[in-house]
Image (cartoon, rainbow over all chains, first blue to last red; front, side):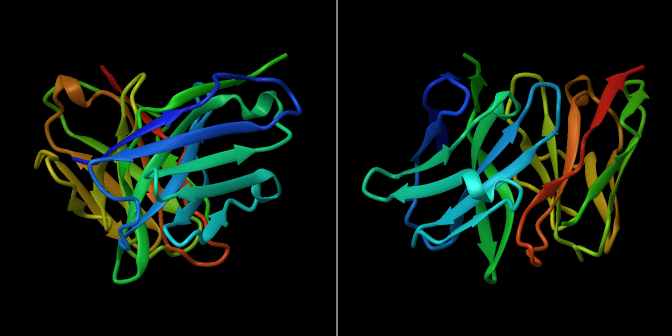
Length: 123
Length: 110
């Protein structure tokens, strides 16, 4: 059973960089069949996809966040990470990591999710 | 960007009754649509993918239909554990490549 677990600081100051790591267990992050994403959800609001990474390091980002987002992968640790720079209060949210499966080369839905971690941006 | 619009925002239904939730895409996403259930304090759970295929372990009372721009999630006989927020999500992969979710439908007990 694949499990994903987010970790990182729960409080970040405005203008600083938010950094989170997702540790994958029960399967290899290097499997060629999966992409690994970050998704966030402000309190009481909907879901926003932030970006994704493939095991090769290839990334895609939400255009609205692209200038501030970096996602990286460390296959030796079975982890992938998120960095979001120049944060403001609007970046306060629960951050999820999730896996999406490729079917015939098409990257699809999110079948496994982490439990989520709350990050608050405040001085 | 493909915009996903869900209706209604809140749906009040009695246990045992049928619930029908709608999701509309601003342009065709073919059958590249998933539905998720989210309970308070929990991560979303995949229910349906490919617009109509139930994910592993999802009860048969959940069904999805539609293609193109109009989609429906139907819960045939509501159980107490089904009251939650439901999101649709497109994964059409057309440029600009990004996934988008609907704003959610809250299914509450009537």
